[in-house]
Length: 61
Image 1 (cartoon, rainbow, N blue to C red):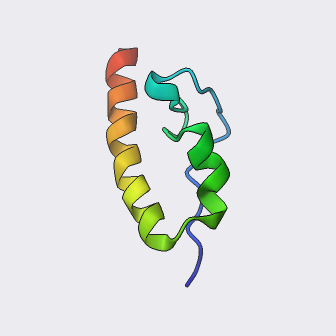
Image 2: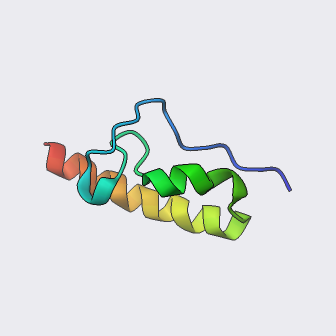
C-alpha cells in the first residue's frame, strides 16, 4: 500500500488552538509520528484535520 502524502504545506506555526499548526492542523507530535502511522490512523487524522482547519479559519476571521 502506498503511503499517503503529508498534509504539510510548509507554513509551520504551532500557535493555533491546542497547539495545532496553522498550516496543516496537526500537532507537533502528530507531525513527528506521521511517517510511522498506520493507514487507518492517517485516514482518521485527515478527517479530524478538516474539522480543525475549519475551526482555525473561523477564529482567524
